[in-house]
Figure 1 (cartoon, rainbow, N blue to C red):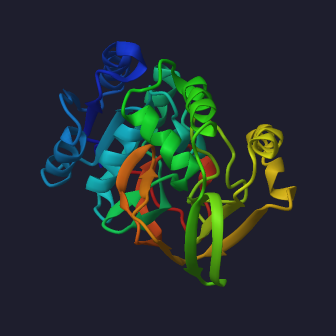
Figure 2 (cartoon, rainbow, N blue to C red):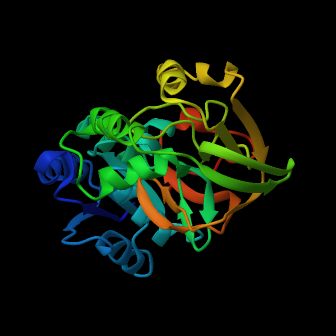
Length: 305
């Protein structure tokens, strides 16, 4: 079956290079006889609306050209449908692209789209929003808020580090009641991160045991600690070594409830997804993704289109 592809471009991604990125992909797909069109977004929410319309009008693939925020919107349009997600990573983080093996090179990403190999991946759902990577609560959600609001003068991982440095001066922790398959935990926390994939913030390995093909969510909970201890622990996050720290705890669950005394903002895929109280649910096999065939698993493999 022909792969009818729509590329949804966030023109602000990649410091404005995303349109050229998408055009290079279109040129290669056209040369491979793949029908392809491009539409660009003008405001937040456009990618989801465009992708939803495309999924209902015969497109077999909607390719998100941007970062994790663009992917987040397209995912929320395609989850549970027959349309497959394509990814053309061109943003600050690109964590979901990394998780499913999509390279940054537009030509290499286009080759993956041309081959049209589909695998199904898990998603998470927080309240009424799907997410592909990590939901954050606490310190890291406040950092994400800084990045989202444009209060950070840098890009990529550097933007996250700048936000961390700023938040260290003012953050005092949050009282959290967390209930899941593991029971109930009451703790004053620095952060609680719930992951469908291992990384956020451009490769920060906050939940190193998470997998988007295991049907569960992994949680990293960090008890509140002083600035000095935070600074000693934080570098370990880049390779997952923080899990050995006595103030860091890991859990796995299919369902999670988060409650705080006062509403606390939640971010997922670098996008705001509401406040506590919140329920987070694992959604096994909820998304079809065009990706390299090395991600096949007997319980998740699908056919090529």
